[in-house]
Amino acid sequence: MSSSRPRATTALLGAGIALVTALAASGCGDSGPPDSGDAKSSRSSDQDSGTATAAPLRWTACPPPSVAQGTSLDGKAPGKDWECAKLPVPLDYAKPGGEQIELALIRAKARDKDKRLGSLVFNFGGPGGSGVATLPGLATSYDKLRDRYDLVSFDPRGVGDSATVRCLGDKETDAANQIDGTPDDAEEERAALAANKAYVDACAKNSAKVLPHVDTLSAARDMDRLRAALGDAKLNYFGISYGTELGGVYAHLFPGKVGRAVLDAVVDPTQDPAEGNLGQTKGFQLALSDYLKDCAASAQAAACPTQDRVVSLLKKLDGQPLPTRQGRKLTQDEAVNGIASALYSKDTWKYLTQGLQEAMNKGTGDTLLVLYDLLSGRGPDGRYSNLQPANRAISCADSQQRYTADDVKRLLPEFRAASPVFGEAAAWSLLSCTGWPVEGKWKTIDVSAEGSAPIVVIGNTGDPATPYAGAHRMAEGLGKGVAAEVTYKGEGHGAYNSGNACMVRTVDAYLLDGKVPAQGTTCS
Image 1 (cartoon, rainbow, N blue to C red):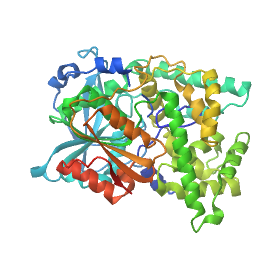
Image 2 (image 1 turned 90 degrees about the horizontal axis):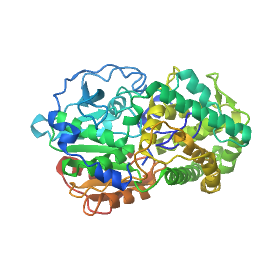
Image 3 (image 1 turned 120 degrees about the vertical axis):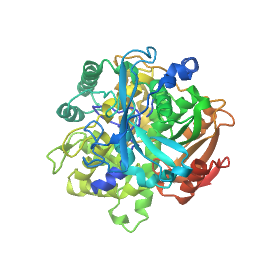
Image 4 (image 1 turned 60 degrees about the vertical axis):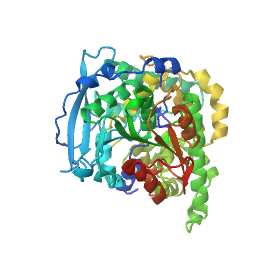
């Protein structure tokens, strides 16, 4: 469930990246930046980022998405409107003339060349989501923006085809996901800790060179190189979920280079990992409660579950996984994440009803397992994208905190009180960076951006993965006069893609016409 700290062995996996599109097609982070001292000392000049020497990009026809990027396009190339390129950047910005890596890019050029405003760069979240694979699948949502912008996205370092982080193989990942990640006794705890260590060791073995350099600060510097390579004096940016954190860090490092920027589904920059996971636990619990109320008031009320029945199902699954047509078993951890998966959008609540009915009445786990697979990056062919390893690597490169099993046990009562469905998994997922071979950059994020152009910051009152309060804290962190706060009274992760006409109108007026929304603008 956690959009920033997934575990291979269990629990709240990262998402927020085109999940709704994937769910419809199927038919069924947070990390934090350096502590404030580090962040401020890391402010970079153009020369530090290497933007002064950015080489022209060579755009060519796009191939189909790779396995690492995911299966959002069903293995097909995105079509003639799309072009792809590679951007060389330093592996280590402390050695800008040293080893280079290449970032995978994609774009669709603006239709109206005479009124073109430049490029609009997207990051859809995770961390770990491939922008190259995601943007074409969501492009219809941004079709009006394409009249005047080149729509551009990229795989951040460590993600997709950009210096790919690799950990376990596909079969090893399947096996790890079967281990109980919410241990009830000493034996289960030893097994969970051993599985977590095996995952960390595999990442260290297979990705040692890149793990120290996949932090968000480096990704923000990459975006400034991208800005220059695209030929734009300022960065026009649309960040969603973890993309809001990346955008906030960019604004902090390069306030004078911010163009028109929108942050939607906003990460709370003031929270450490434990606070972030607890906040998400409460957010998903709120979304689950809203779903249950909505279902009970519908024409299908007789078939709707109750929370007590959901909790009872999960307890049963702890020792008795459910069979599926795939031949795999649906575990308790996978069911928890499958439920969370469907809560990312109100459009997918119907699949949650379907999945819970199957599990409770038929004793099968097919739909919940499909929902889990979509959230975890597992394709129908059993191959995984690198969403999980990239998510963990970026989160652990950012956050300094390293929690122990004793820390988790101390926090468990508070997490259980926050949610009987999601609490335990969220608490135990705090171990994902334990033993990580790279030290984190910060304790909480400094996003102060004095001198930046206005940034539109959108909070959704029903957002499960990035709860509403985070938007106000991001706005405060950016600084007085920088953020224009907008509220969406709705459900799901994010606001612009909700289909709400008021939200689309408000954001489009800013991005296309430069009309900054009035402080406190609300859409419902």
